[in-house]
Amino acid sequence: MIAGELLVVGYATAIGFVAAGMLGSFYQLLTRRPPSFVLSVDTWWTIFSSTVMCAFAGPFIIMRNALRGRRIEHRPLGWLAASTAIAAGWSLCSGIVVLEMTLSVVS
Image (cartoon, rainbow, N blue to C red; front, side, top):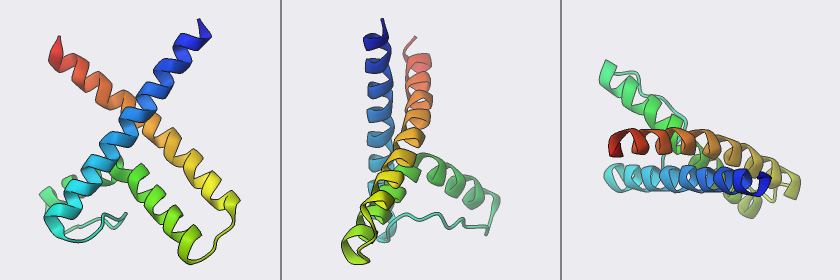
């Protein structure tokens, strides 16, 4: 029973990572700059879109910054492990949201 639940958790986490990567890459394709946690506050639309962007692309941003920090700034391995754990937890949450939205559209 627990193995099945762990499989679902792993699947939702993978879905969250994939959704974050796709959204982050799409953002970079459109704007020609990498996504970041900076919120644009020009109009209500930019506030909403940048908030959604940060909410769903957050794991991608965290892992990109963590890998760059490890490679360029020589941050400790514990920093990378902590960033990975945070990104995995965030991906699990966003993966559950993505799966729920997908299942509600399909059924």
